[in-house]
Length: 450
Image (cartoon, rainbow, N blue to C red; front, side, top):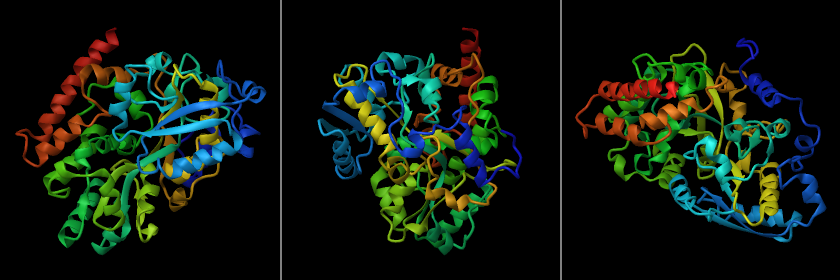
């Protein structure tokens, strides 16, 4: 897709959704809101229509906030179509940590969200194939993240965009009536909020750890290029050097912490409480995916106070990257794979989870755009998927990262940055960046020779 400003803005997203699959739009599932034509080895839709779907399944989720309410309503609706399937839910408060422990055995539910810590190449060892990419890509976008040798192992529960969730009233009360666009403007806005003294300018959610990983999702915005993450990054030795995207991204985190624009004691943060605090005007901003919009708006007396903006950048183009939320798949060891597949198809195609609960877009090709995107209509903001890895370099960023023990999508070095900024560690930001870059260079040299 050409980078012509006249074509982008809000309409770029429409083009993305219609073209991403690489095929023509399906004329059945997407339009009629019926389950997709599935081609899994044991779970094709034709097989499902020919035999009775029955059994008991356990669905694992990270949504502790709605597992006893919304999800039970989903089960009731699902049972209208599949009355002989009993659906149980288990919500894990530390999903990534708990699910990886459970996956040391065969007991990790029937339907699960595929943890990001399991390498793509190992997917066939844990999950049931859902179908061929060539067929399922006619129905869904974002399948490549969990595709091995042409077989799909996970379907996105939603397609999210990444940026900053903020309380417009908190910003307005501090004199900021338009969303900051550059890092300098953003830090000045946070200082204005601090000077007013009524809210925490930027909440890191340090104690819960996982929210810190949300910063990595905005790397494309800082780079101003959809090529950076998967194409440029694995081919550079300057990944954490001044002027490069990673350095500029986390400098915002460091500066905000150093200037006292975050929580007074980051070790006492609380994720669930932070959502209510933002809704009530006690927090100015948090770096989170679009999935959080609905969660916070649902707690606000005035939902319109809760808004979303791109991460501040000095790039010439403002790109809000589209990316999969958790992908959902089937435990390879499940005893009720047909029932598990029926749930996945219903959940993605017929529930309101992708837009109403995940705060993103439906992964179904041709699905209508969510209301949360209307604020960007007519703006210069571009919504684009990242460029896939070059042939032969699939998973290379992940390999380098793991070998270097950097943890691009882990919280450790983010915590280190915050600790250094608030004076708990005797090292500078440049010390940390040099350490990370040295590890990257050494690992890249090793991995690319293998």
